[in-house]
Amino acid sequence: MCLAVPGKVTSIDESNPELKMAKVNFGGVSKNICIQWLPEIKVGEYVLAHVGFALSKIDEKDAEDTIKILKDMGELEDN
Image (tube, rainbow, N blue to C red; front, top):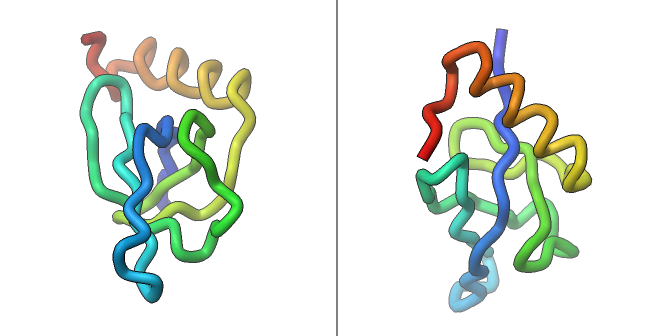
């Protein structure tokens, strides 16, 4: 089973038009994530990401609810 994790987009790098990337914050840990498939994503929005790729946009409330559940399960650390 695969798990897509919600994260908040903190910056977007469009320097390579064929590989649009974003810095995404996952509960205090920032990762570079490919957002090429989601060209409408903006800084401050949330995405569901899996293995370095943003799969879909998620609204803030759903993202925060999921992050809380993951923290409660011990899957994410509080920072």
